Image (tube, rainbow, N blue to C red; front, top):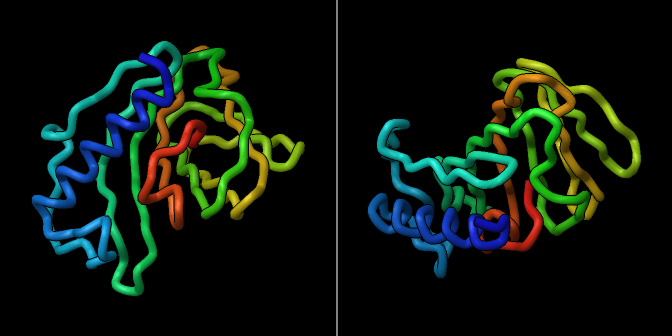
Length: 151
């Protein structure tokens, strides 16, 4: 499954979860309080990364957001470097990511966070020999609509 198709599938699943929880992606109604059980959220296996959509919707002030968990295979990147409107964070759970922001690369390890400002070019790569597991939290326009290169 290619990355664009996967993002569209994750977006569809998030919309289904949001509808069930009271969030409305068209009006910006805030996501209602709810528990999302990890084992109930499907995993989408792709060539270089496995992804699990966790939660998404709108905050009380109308900001769109979405969160997914990814497991990036060793020696892989999910897609080429890119940029988009809205902010994004990578929170590393296990392994190591090489995060490049506007041409500057850093190794991001367990417990560390990388923040990407709106419009900044960024990319990630797993330089390790084990999968890198991380959360992606997106705020703003890319948090509500799928786009070809995300994360």
